[in-house]
Image 1: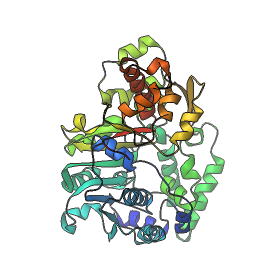
Image 2 (image 1 turned 30 degrees about the vertical axis):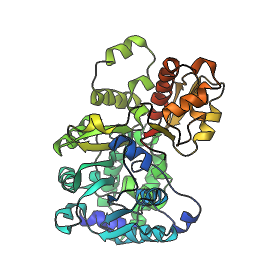
Image 3 (image 1 turned 135 degrees about the vertical axis):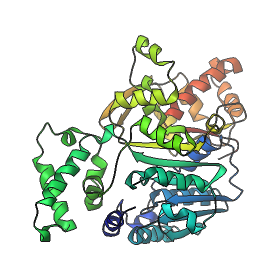
Image 4 (image 1 turned 45 degrees about the horizontal axis):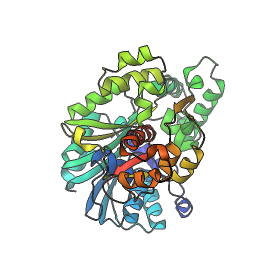
Length: 417
């Protein structure tokens, strides 16, 4: 990673975070949510009473780090998480956030992920690399370094920028470089560059692609750090789904899951049976590519990765012994579904309505993170006549699971969560 990239994050650590806020809330997201990574990398069977070594490569100000560390602490897991980042300023923010939460399962290291071969940090069963590879001069070398540090049965959660959802960003970056090239030397301070970016944003015509792009509001609302990361970054690129798949294949890895899964499914956007029928034969990457082209607003790609040949056995699938677990707020979700036939989902300027399978409220209402699918059947079957028999319950549960897993709300484990 270049000196200019390091300098940007020393000056403006991203995302901007106040460690005092940790006393009020835990920021949760993807990748590295413990339910997610267990579901998609370990078929729901990871035993978190056993040691767990994780690397957060390019940890920044600590969002993924703090979430993962807190989840592992709450699970009573004897974990060691290694935080690695070039920026001393970013590390200081992450360390303070960990201190507020009294998290003692983190080891902080300053350095580049490209230095992993010489840092002698050992191997990891899980690696988080969120928003880093696309800032490297050679992302292929970066992913190769991470793969070399991955345990044979381990997995990764990564995020890279998405090309179509960032429409308008790169022309804007080019315009700002042009303006900087013709500015007098004293004007080339970070403060003046940010002011120039804001001035230009105000003057964008209605036809400008960035102005029309509804996907990037989070960056623009992120203060100086967010604006600089979006428009003034000295080195970044974006990926389409096929380009990401090629990067992953080159490292000897494969994609186990896209997050959120519904966004990479053409059926989330299309209702015409003849169109959907023609897409049925597509492999998962081709389907995800079609969905990306269709939606047009995927500004980032979050994927879970495993070593080549392992993806089919890495992801959890329902059987009677599995324990379904809802993401936080599951009880409210079940209540909100009563009497409804569809669910409105709004994200990045797009609104879709997804069909709610019959009996979703009753089935999800019985999911408590402790009952197995068989126990959920006994609970629901005692009150819903139509679901008393297993032959009726199993397909009903599978439809509910498929819908709410795609929405990133429902996961499976081999034991109580």
